[in-house]
Image (tube, rainbow, N blue to C red; front, side, top):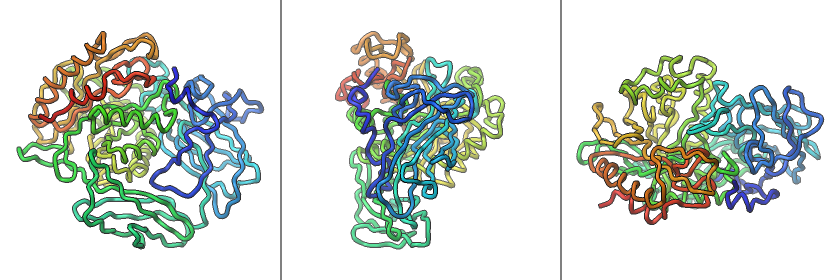
Length: 561
């Protein structure tokens, strides 16, 4: 089921935009396109290939040209050859994301390996280069049969669980850098002091300096930004700057904004942006596509989802159990869309009786009971912490990210107080929803609620925390000809666009708007688009139909009197 962007896809020009908008160099080599592939049952590179796969689309999806699931115990092999333009210095090979465990070979030399299906990694391939380079990637993916991060992938898909995906699903690319080069940036706006703190992680002995508005600042530096324009959803002002290290140069940007939880004039805690209360009027965004699954078919496709949500009047997207390519966050930065970023869940098989205990009994279990939360494997808990740290570091510079969400609905939840401490140490500038939905550990500044099957009645938190409705709604309307299958899954079935529109009008007018006036700090409607069996999106899975006109939805969700 193709989207319009998938239908127009040029196999020779796949996701060609520069992959890392906050560290842009003058040139790079995009390795997306057709590669050879093969499935094997052992770890030996095949002598023959099964066919062509379109990278970076996972073999399970339509755009890959394969449509075959990688099973536990199998290997998925990739192969292609490439040449590089004449260059000096070093060559870095980048992978945006490979699900789940992979080893990379260049010219028959193992150059790196990586564990974790949602975050980027890179390797210096200079010493292994030749005139014509033979690149091979071997992948294994146990999906929900292991403790690794897996999100909503499940071999027995259905309902809220989706088709498993594997292999390369974000851009593969090379760039040439000098011997001394910039490896990473760390950008922290200080709203109250009208300044921005910038530091650079570098390789080599050359010193780095930032160039901002014509002035040079040796790094690390606190750079004044007098009379700045604050970044808001209505005015997403971005400031450009560059960093130079020897012969290396990268272009970047930052924004001046501040996130906090504070008491409003009525004494109730709310979410604040730039020192003033702001109701986060958002949607759950799973980032799945009918043709590319995890991978959007184009840059324009990503923009479409964000801009449509903004046109509908939403100012926030909760990126649900997925880490997107950096270009998605860049578009949120420049378009003015707040983001709540979920961490990816893992662990063993979840027991529905345990996960849903708070719904039935009101009892929230302590998350140090590892067995109850399917977190018995110490290796899985260690890997989660490693990837949590990596995710925070990877996305730290994105102005749009307002909140971190380490756990959702008890799926593989454990030691959330410790995890929140790790997050705060890495990033003290954003808020944290420690347990989205339930299994509240009574910590932090936020009480998080998921309400689907009953009317939401707002109550203040007994601990004085800000109260957030972090999932609700999920009204389903099956749009004939634009659905994954015949299942009509959601939390309230409507038979027409008119019924859906009226139901949403009543939902917001009778529940969300009164709750907002009583102190509700945020509301997250489920969801942006349909996903497989779930037809509770405001847009169809193939993105061909926007179920409710944006101007109508804007009027429905507005909390302004």
